[in-house]
Image (cartoon, rainbow, N blue to C red; front, top):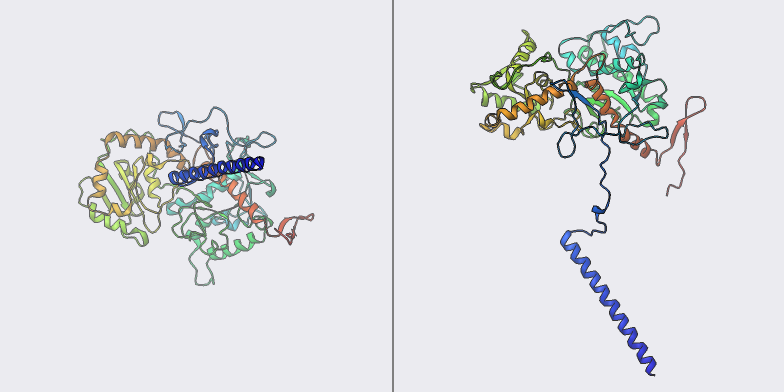
Length: 497
């Protein structure tokens, strides 16, 4: 009997101890939740904090003193020097892919579209069944004037053609491949901006304009290709830099990567910064070589010359005109291409400390890139603007950003600009001279120019594109190449779960 009582007492003592432990544990857990707002099952400080590889560490620009320096910025906004050793993911052969520093160029498959879509728009007459001009002997000029600012399609296509005759193709940022299965991305060589500028007006004897006809032909062609069907178009590059280009086709080709000036005339589900690439305008004014100016020699404080009365988001131009027109060291005037307007604007920018870039019919304009080429510190008043390469370039180092709601307040903008000291302006001016090469279009392309920067922007899209393509195949019929060169469908299993 005594043994049973002793055993019962021991069990009660053990149960009491167990219950006390549970209560203390629950109370301590509640204390953590109350003090932190969430449980902390793992202290991250004990984990390694190795930085993720940065895309294209070795993008460089030529600085004013002739030295090449990195322009990438890290999360802290400071310039980041190139690493001593290459980082990134390697394949089985040791070659770096586009998730890290690229040893091999971006592989691009370019459709052999009929010349009517590209150089035929420049009045090129092919001999026989030729599709492309021989760029070793013939470089067709692009139309001057406003056409030139949206000529991105021309420069990228020339660069791909040049990659086929390059002495050292592996030193290139992008190269053309003839087999689409080897390609990272698919390039659609339609000069859509030129098509809009030259052929969007409908002649009386035409049912549709040439521009509309070409868009319809392009959609029919692309959607019939095996490359489009396999990816749903997600890996295709479609150029539509002019805001009004591809107006008819964009709603059908939206899964592709658009190269745009901005997103001002696109619904968010059709074009956005995650999917697409923003490319710079080609500046209209001449580049400012051998710039010996300084803060004191640029006697105009603030410069704007262009259309003042604009629709849509351009109301701020009119408001600012009335606020600034009487300031003695501000040039705010109407301007156009007539009477050497571009030359006069370039001269004015070179004599000015700051140049206004105000939203017009669209969030962006060529004026920003004219200012950069003139080494005139841009003042950007455009709330919805997207900027080229902004994932690796910190524009706040050489631009001043002002919200539209603040800019149109009386005396706000002028007081802000006057408060910027000589030393601050000089620092931004020096940075402008460092980065200007990133916005230059030219043939042949040069290291770190606009053509190469756009290819690199596209390369940074590749991992996301591949992920989307792979996810899209989860629960749908897989489309794969057949033995006859066509496509065959592998039905998805009935029971996915």
